Length: 99
Image (cartoon, rainbow, N blue to C red; front, side, top):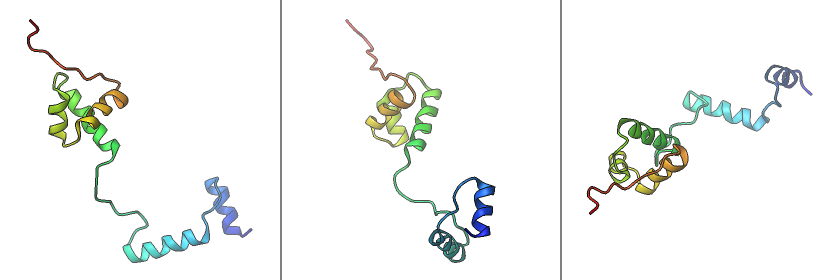
């Protein structure tokens, strides 16, 4: 085993990446100026929509899931899932008059 690989394992505590991985990083660094991935377009991640749902609940507890999902631009089913699974809340339907 080469000295560089041994030093890498000693320093980081894990096996070093394969040569192909390192060459890919090098190619990306020279082509794009960084080895980081570019931000991707498309649907927001669950984490992003969950944080938005949580903030919305903190602002107003009594708002309906339908209004909340419309404000955030996410499906009502996703809003209800965030409330039930992620935030451990129950959505409710308010009845204005029950005669």
